[in-house]
Length: 406
Length: 167
Figure 1 (cartoon, rainbow over the protein chains, first blue to last red):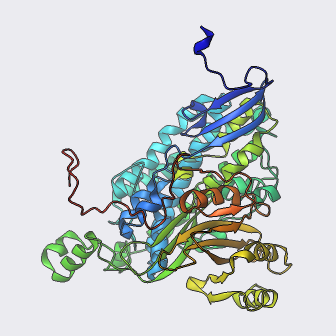
Figure 2 (tube, rainbow over the protein chains, first blue to last red):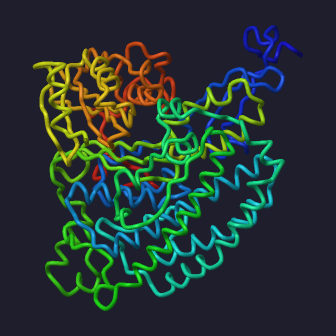
């Protein structure tokens, strides 16, 4: 009987247990593997394997015109794909030297902050799930739905949005989109307050998360942390403030920071960022409302060589037809140059490094994925802790497999 | 006083006279090229200098230039000074036949995954890396897929005969 069981050399003699956390474990919330060496329930060592859903985006991008790369960026951090889309459009606009109108910037800010809320909402409620509080997760899902409905109204899709175009949006926001936004702004604060009440001063949740997977500010910087995880460790680095893009300098918001960088701080930072995002959306909505008459019809910059013309123009005007043809066939040539541009994604600094040699496709495109970079700290964060702490640390880092594997 | 690109360039040329070339400022970011064996010295100098303080490694990746004979692979570092909020970029070029580069993992823990990724896709051999194995691709892959000699399939090809997905 035992002849058929093949055990690795020395696996009976050794004093630790090997446990595979992943690739398809419900607690990993994505496809990646951690091989844990356990002494009882204590994690002695963890080895991570990633790349299960590697899709070679950087290689594919070398054969695609700019507008066809947008759908690839959706699939990086799929919890907040609009931010990735906007980040990509902003990179292209920087390369092409396009100046977007203010109204476009404000509309983009609305969409990006909605995406940030949905991203943080998932992450925080998942932390709740992993610490045993399932109802919060189920409850807030219906309010993420409201955000998705707004996306749907703007661009037609919900999860992988491909929202916007180089230069602006594909169409103006409909009155229904603004109504949905109003509905969201009216209903969501109450829900967030309730969600917050469930967790922040909850004794069980606090005992569970305080001191769990902490990291110091210095360590976090050395590990390349960005975004809420870095801010939880006490560094107030936020791309929106440091390198404002899309007119973020016009808005008044604070950057919350934590002190210890543990799961509880990460939770609190994300929670406060949702409040700040709400305030930014309200400000942006006010600013958008101030545009009257012809200004209220502006939803894209004037970049005929990259922005698809309206269909009725394509059928009636020669110039529009030519541009349409050139864009769709991917014949729009871009200027020579190399550009690095970054946005504050759901997880941190999402950077795009684009090298163009003057062709129709990028010569090289590299995504700086925040998740991929800070995941390497996971081994250190969970070492010496309990197995259940490893799970909760993983979810509070907001590891998204799509972003890690590109 | 804010840190300007001119100051950075001045300090670097003072420290490494005649060794840094190709100074540029594409889209406002100071960019230069350095000899491959100096990469760690430059990183360390930029890290330690009291005025420069480039202590955050934003990004590290490689680019393949097949026509650049003898220096086909470029490794690109993006550094960020978080105090003065200045970014710089520098490149080193290595021969594809002997792509040896010193690893920055001792200075930046974040370089670990990024160097593994660069090795995985371009075959840059980082000397001193603690665990230089493939990260995203399968372990038994025997080529480096992001090099330019492996083109993504040409969409206009006609030699494929596939009933379902034929083109």
